[in-house]
Length: 66
Image (tube, rainbow, N blue to C red; front, side, top):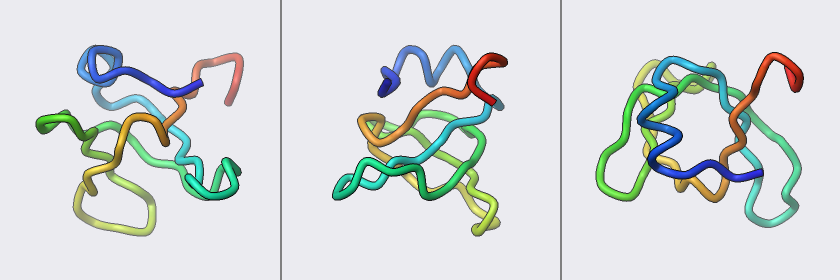
């Protein structure tokens, strides 16, 4: 389930899964670095810098879903 900006703010440093908008398949994992405007800043494994990502494309990974 997609996260909200409030959830992203409250869960800085937590793991998220990126879902492709086209296929809805999980294609990448990263950690929440912060929120900027309407975007969640995510530090993906493939990038040294946080990348702005729309929250509709992110799932918060809890202990049960890891």
